[in-house]
Image (cartoon, rainbow, N blue to C red):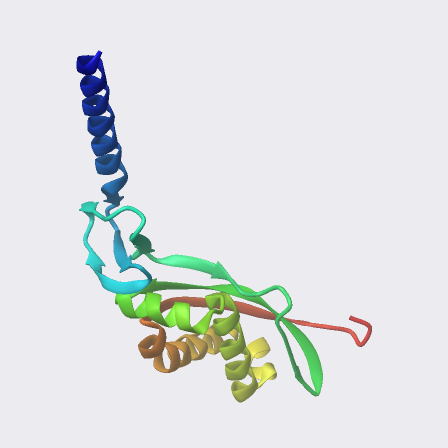
Length: 172
C-alpha cells in the first residue's frame, strides 16, 4: 500500500510542476512588446517571443506598437460664440512601451479623452471658422500641435488627425 502512496505523491508533484511550467509561459506576439510587472512594480520590457514569468507574482501588459486609430469622444463640443460638435478620429503609434504604459497608468484617463480635449484647445486657438473653411490645413495644424505637445509626455507619435465641426442649434 505504501508503494501506491509514493506513486500518487510522485504523480501529484509531477502534475503540479507541469501546471506551474504551463502557467509560467507568456507569448508576446510580433508587433507587440510586453511590460513585465512583479508584484505591481515595473521590472522590464519583454521582446516578441516566449517569456517566462513567475505565476501569482508577475503580470505582463501587452503593448501594441502598430498604428492604431481611435474615435474622438462622442460628447466633444466647442463653444466660442457658436456651439459646435467635434467629430473625428486620430491615428497614433507608441514610441517607447515602458514610458507609455507608466504615463497611461498614472493619468488613469482614456487617451481618446485626453487627445479630444487637447484637440478642442487647438481648434479654439486656430478659430472654428478656420477649421470649417480650411479643414485640411486645420487638421495639419492640429496634428503638428499634438505631436509637439503630447508626443514626449505620452510617448506617442501621431500620424493622422481627422475632424469636422458640426454646428449645433441652440436646442442641442
